[in-house]
Structures are given as C-alpha cells and as structure tokens.
Image (cartoon, rainbow over all chains, first blue to last red; front, side, top):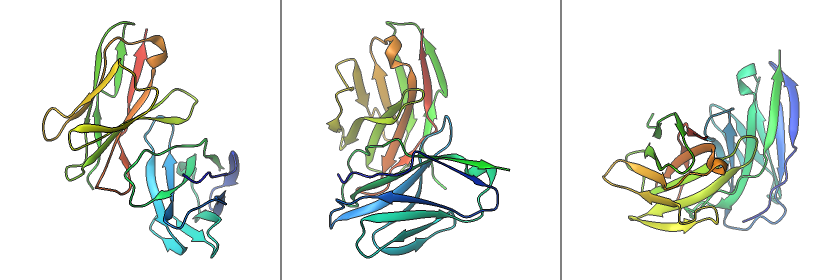
Length: 111
Length: 112
C-alpha cells in the first residue's frame, strides 16, 4: 500500500473553495486514489475516487497530475457542515482488502 | 440510497461481559468488514469477511473476538469478555466484490 501524506489540519471560511493536497510518491500503476470524509462520531463516508486527470461528482472534484504522485481534493464553496476529517487513501481498485486509515486532514470551517 | 445499518447505536456493558454488535450490510454486497475507532485515535481495521469466512484479520482481532453472518442479511461482531480498552466506536462496512467500502454509522461501546 502506498504511503500518503496530507496536512494535519486546515481552516477555511464558509463560501470558500478548499483544496486538500495529498502526496503519494510511491503510488503503483494499479493504485486508485480514494477520499473519505468522517464527521465526529460517524463512520467514514466515501467521497470520490480517481485514477488520473480529473474526476467530479456532486460533492467534490479530484485533481490528479500526470505523474500521479499527488492528488488534490477540491471542495467548492464550503459550508459549516463540511467540517470533518478527510482521508486520502491509495490502493488497488480491484482489491477488496482492509483500509488503512491515517490521521487525515482535520478541516475546520468558520462562519 | 442503500446504506449500512448498525445496532445498537450505543452499548454500555460491564467488564467481562459478552457483547454482540449487529450490522446489516448493503444487500448485494459480498465483502464485510469491522473497524474500530478509540476516541481521538485513528480508524483501525479489525477483520474482513467473505464467503462465510474470515479473509483477513488484524492483531487486535484476538480470540476474544468473533464474527458471524448468521443469515442472509446480518453480520455480527462478538466480544466474549469485554475489557476496558475495548471501549470504542465500532464501524461495520461492506463492499461489492472489490470496490469502495461503505460504512455504517457505528456502535459506541462503553465498557465500565
């Protein structure tokens, strides 16, 4: 499993765009990049997954450069309810194996 | 949208007692998991289950723990003799073959 590095915490304000960058220098050819979100006292929630370039859904966008050694989760126009821990994970899409969670990025949104 | 459900939401027990945490995975999923999160710490993998048997387990998942899929819908985690350090949030997750894991809301276990 490729090791990931992401900021421990970030602060932003309502209405701003928030970008959380994750480094994964040792990503393998078969690895996908997945982001989860966890609110306090709740289970992690899948946000988005991608392999290369850009993926967008109703919640977020995921930008992956050509070398795939990093990725950026972009949350448009955040609100207070986006305050959560965000986890960047790298692993094979075809592998139904355990998820190893790191400490994630604790995002705090202020009014 | 289908979701993983867990019961109870909060379980309080005395040290040494047995507890059973229950999960109903998403109906067409084939892989099932248990994780736990001690307050203020990371989410930790406990066990994965496929085709009615354990496919992987962590060091945490010792002889005090067991899992079972007693019928076509439930997936349970049993702790035979709870310890104080078993106090945590326990999350069940499921996935369709080899895909994204969907987590339940968790059961908060408090061991007194």
